[in-house]
Length: 138
Image (cartoon, rainbow, N blue to C red; front, side, top):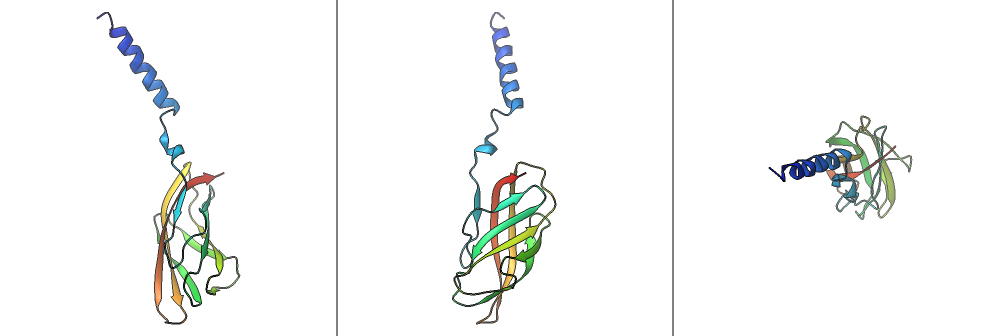
C-alpha cells in the first residue's frame, strides 16, 4: 500500500495527457491523395471546412476525355466544375476538379471520390476512383 499513491498519480497523469491530446497521432499522419493511372493526381487535394474538395489531375490517356459526373463518395459530394470551363480534356492536359460536400467538422478528412469519364476514341465510359486523406483548411 505504500506505493499505491504513486500508481494512482501515474494513472491520473496519463489520463490528463490523453485528454489534452498529447497522444493524438492523427495530426502526425501525412496528407495523402491517391488517384491512380490513367488520371492521376498531381498533388494532394485541398479540403476546406465548408465542404469543398479541390483536386488537380492530369489526363494520362492519349485521347480526349469527357468528364461526366461524380459517381459515389464516402461523403455526399457533388462534382462542381472544371478550371478549363469545358468537360473535354485533351491528352496530357492538367485540370482541376471540384467536389462540393457537406461541411467538414473534423480536423482531418478521409474519403473516397470517384467520377465517370468518357474516352472519346473508344466511346467507352469509365469510372476513376481515388482516395483523399488530408487535413481540413479552415
